[in-house]
Image 1 (tube, rainbow, N blue to C red):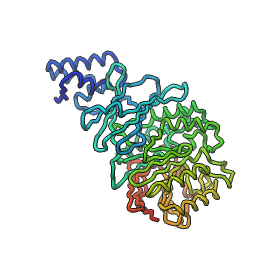
Image 2 (cartoon, helix red, strand yellow):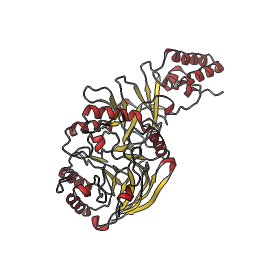
Image 3 (cartoon, rainbow, N blue to C red):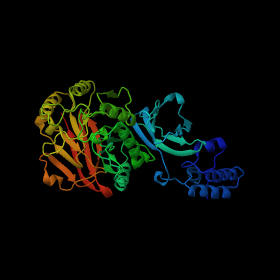
Image 4 (tube, rainbow, N blue to C red):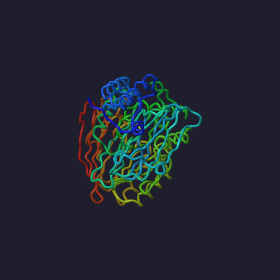
Length: 482
């Protein structure tokens, strides 16, 4: 029998409590265990804590050193967002208006994070149910491990998470890359996210269709999603997907595609694009710093580990697909991108929802819809000092394209990862083969795990695409030099 004996009720109440809104009898069992512990009756205390644990009372489980997996009890939906070595953003999605009390602890030193280092805001969409509690936490130490503790109104702990910041210097950055996250596929998402998390990525890039706003009650409803519908579906997705309930948080960087934008194959004519962007910014907040730069729409740049990650808004400014002379990103966003690239050093990741080079198929891509605009974009890119790689999702398949050197003046690639848990279509490549493809898989759920390193101005990547049951679908080493 092993009890975690703690001196003092103040410390006891600080650390432990109930796993969900506690019933009176559950609180009584827990309080009896505390009383037994205070008078030194360890055997009765252990039995009572064990009894409380069997009722899914988190406090009792922690007292007997039994770690409950988040799947075993109701947890909050929590996402760690933009993170650097001394700063991070934490979002907690609340489907109701019952707010927990939240505390932040430096687990390494055993001390609270000072309130002056925490900026809290409540963000919601108009008068709709539910909200997001946002925390910006500064003056953090990359060597420390931190803990979020969430308490209910009786002052009992309901949930907790562990998080860290980014190291100041890291030779290799490990990246999880995923798109197309339908919460219709609940068993598949559980397996796929567990696999991705087990690889311990430093960051996860969610590159589009992270929420299917146009799927309601498991059915595709089509048409233009209203802001109310988008807001509701964002909250539901956060509740449903296991990644938002993992114990050890992983920083997330996100951008949208058409389904989280609110309109299938949507462009700048979408009537709710302004409202949709406001909702997106609530769930994927931008944090201003020396390492970041905000662009038009939902676009932004974050620099990490000598690499610049550009998340591009390929919906808000896009001309109609029938406008062959139109633009894909919009002139304002293109100008921002090229101007910003001249202010930073290192290779550039150009990330958006749908493919850049997709002339080989009949679906959305920059090359198919706005070919002249892409040609002009590549001319400008060719003049930039540092190399770039293209990253996309949307296609419900995974592939690596090797692009002609004539396009950018150097050897580069497009990585497409799509369908971590959404519909997939066997036979896509047989029907529409891609002459640029050097590796690919269709008809299988997938995500990519990328090990990236920078040497001088060169980007070296080990790219692996994973499917179900830890299947390696393909793996390639690619180097991008200019």
